[in-house]
Amino acid sequence: MTSATASPSTAAAPFDASAVKADFPILSEQVNGHPLVYLDSAATSQKPLAVLDAERDFLTHTNAAVHRGAHTLAAEATELFEDARATVAGFVGAAPEQLVWTSGATMGLNLVAYSIGNAGLIRPGDEIVVTAIEHHANLIPWQELAARSGAVLRHIPAHDDGTLDTDAAASLIGERTRVVAFTHVSNVLGIVNPVADLVAMAQAAGAITVMDACQSAPHLPLDLPALGVDLAVFSGHKMLGPYGVGGLYGRTPVLEALPPFLTGGSMITTVTLDRAEYLPPPQRFEAGTQPIGPAIGLAAAVRYLDGVGLSRIHAHEGMLAERMRAGLVDIPGIRLLGDAAGVERVGLWSFDVEGVHAHDAGQYLDALGIAVRVGHHCAAPLHARFGVTASVRASTALYTTTDDVDRFVEAVAGIRPYFGV
Ligand code: PLP
Image: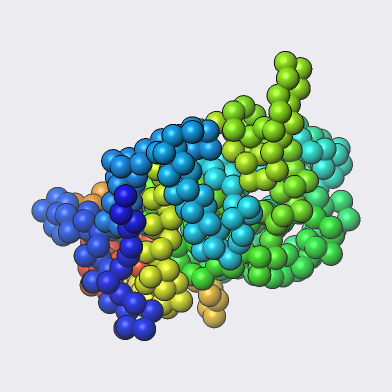
């Protein structure tokens, strides 16, 4: 078994996105006769060779189920799997026992909503507060929990510029609030939300905080214990890792207070025909065979990200976001969603093209080899808030170059003339 290491870049060297890009085989593909410009990293990121190799090495040399076999491969696989947990936990500032493997962020958020409900922490008339700009994965599980428990779901609104209305949050979060759920970075607006304010309000009310870190984990340094959130989720496939794996971070007392969501093998101490005793976290939440290869791949992914350096990635993508904005605002008929000034953001812009449906705009860009996301990006209420049903979203990652952004902006300028509007 060889362990995958990363990146030609080091924390000290100047950021070279082209060198990073060379580690991602798919990014040298042609699409529709053009070199691929991949601007859909918020939907899913591309994977560097280090990640593909790590999963393949594991499956080629070590593959075995973990935590159960007495044979050598099982012991080696268990060690790699638990090392991966320590690596991924460390990436978000956590201890290994604070990281639960999930199949992705959607699974993590459902786990949390069900476990909080099953713990009896939500009673009729209690309140669950979410923002009005969530991905459906951090909205619908709370709608369902409210419906099951008789709780009231309340929403923190956004200002016209995409920032959260923290004054409204302060008046919404109160003594009936049991949970405050919010995204760190919106997958449509790209704005980094005021986590410290939200955590302070929730703590004052004695509410549990649940943060969706899908769109921050691959783009900026993340220290979940320092942010003070109780629970947070992230998604492997959006942070250079494989599909089918994600992480749920929990503060130790919070995880310890929650009952399991799924039950079955690998999460028990004793079982009789009538009842079972459960292991402590994180295993309590890991019923059944876990995504072992993907977890090892995700560890390689976070080593790669760390090798490049999250501060440098954040600065690079901030520069790209500025460059993209500067190009887009000059194009007639383009309206950016969440164009707030002076806020911290990741490399992501969603926009409306006046007179052209987002899907038509997406197809036009695709014909030029440019991959963007079109639609509501699983955030339909957010789009309704901004008066549209769909938008075009361009999202960057550490491998995005200024040339990618320039080609994209030039292409966007051609959309309305092409459609004759
Ligand atoms: N939350 C946000 C902000 C997202 O962007 C996504 C993915 O689109 C999800 C949650 C769902 O993540 P997963 O694909 O891991 O279930």
